[in-house]
Image 1: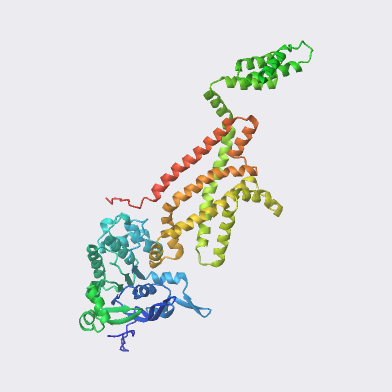
Image 2 (image 1 turned 120 degrees about the vertical axis):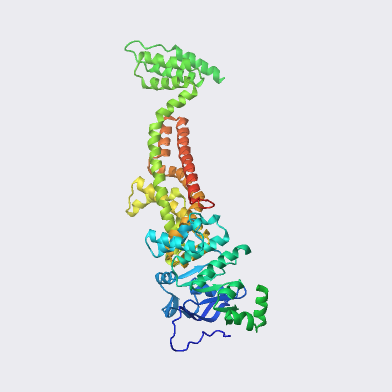
Length: 268
Length: 303
């Protein structure tokens, strides 16, 4: 089990990580929410981050998408350092255009869905390709229908989100993110706001995506994600990666920390 | 007793004879007019009319008697006939004024939301000079009376070398004032939208402008309708203030007619026209409000 160090590479046949976080620090006043955390994801790799509330896992995830501005460290996307530039000796967020461009390659799904309530399901899913990628209308429609089919909601395409169940909303949110054909998907507690009986359908949608080889980071309390779709499970606490490993290592062998054991016991 | 004296006066007026030809009829005309007024005051309309006709029998062109007789004859009719006749008489002038009021209202309604949106976006921007400028704009135009602003623009600016026509001054004053009010309403509406909406839009790769235009601002429409409707109803009535800067709109037209005829019907008619405006507007706005909010809980079958 490793802590805080990226997995070593064997020098030859090195695959460029899709995304690489180096020594990320995020502070809120005196509180250090993310404390020198590093993480690398190869294409098609699936990382699940678990940990108690306030451990900094959501903050870290949001930093990947520049929704949180980091105070230290660097973010590499496809080998290039991205997101921040030096300006008058201070590090600031890159030009909005470039940040938007980066975000358009990274899909994000939120705990509270944040569907656009004034658009139908179809319009929600079309919005990214239409407004951001400026694709022709017909192409946007086709993409949207494909994505809705993927999450099994084609029959709801002309409905406004207000009438959908939580599980359906989250599946639409997933379709909306996928319509941008992202290289990386970020899931921020995708099932935490759902009634227990609705967790399954969202879980299945994400599982399908994982099986198709989507690179993803999932922040969750739901152990199912860690068990069934993770290549790597990371336990985060107090802004640091306390432990990480494969699901097998994680759940069966390396419960050496009382803290992790008690967290898992409560969560299972 | 006063009434006794008045009766004596009436007797006295009656004794003054018709003038013989070549004789001055001044005293005769004055006496009969006085009689007519006294009878009118006593609501003895037939006798008042008779007094006027006595004058007209000798001097058919006497304007004073003709006008007074018209008033008396009008007063002899039932109130609704009187009201109808006044309506016919005053409506053309009032309608002209109403058209101008309508123009002022419509132009301000089109201009001030745009101005308000720009100022609101400035207020919530991250560029301190712009924030300060927009704050200052709102501070000035919400903090001083509209009447004073209109005076300043129309009577004050010429001393700085800027002379504006009444219409331009009126539109400028109303536009700036209402932009300031709407700016704060729009800012409130924008800030009331869940911040997650902006994050979701940004996460899709939208720029701030795209997110505002496509996601945030469309969601404010429903929330904006009630307070903006209120403002626009206030606007319809506030246009009356521009009557003070030589604009002939509804209020000014009514004022002019009232000062000429001292007829309260003019004011009633003006009030009715204002009510028509505000009612038509309220109904229209309620319809729009229902339409823009339709996505909340509407089910549109796909088949």
